[in-house]
Image 1: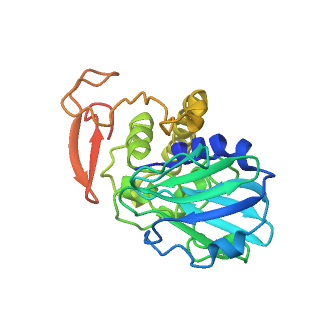
Image 2: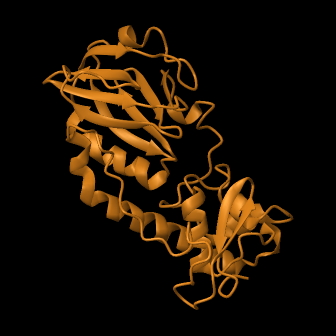
Length: 271
């Protein structure tokens, strides 16, 4: 599933190609995504120019004259830049065709993503209105986590993956950040002190920033013919390493399930 670094990599990959360009055609081959593609999207976007491409959590925001296209990649979605006349592959559901022969093509085999239009400020849209702070911007720190965790018995891993608490901390990065912070993923969120939350907040930001930086070297892949998404090769310390020795202490990494997600941790380093 695309997580925050992949979505940010996508944003950086497509923005230079479409910002400032006007729509000349919208082709919807399959409108049945997680929510239906608006039937009037083609008329809405006709001749509109992209003012910018932003990210909010795992949502991409394409700002047009008169409104914003809210896009989510779901579990299997991706965008790529291609020629407008390139024959679509299976699961290439939507094309946004821009002046100058640029096509932004949305591909989604499982159709759990979305393309929705809002004429209102996107921060007021129901999908975005209740989101927590961005982990790489001001407003996110250990004090924020400690305050929201007070009295909560939920596992800290599930807590930091809650988009109402902080956006974009998916399963991989929650595992990695908790390892770096030395916190057991099953520990009750309300039983962790302020000092440890300050460390954890820093580790969350560190892991995400490093992953985005690694992704930045593969942005050219957004314009190749195969549409390879250009996600970075991840250097993982615990995730998907069950049974392997911890890179720090040598104790075998364990795998449990929390909130129906595979959860990896080192019993020697995390408590």
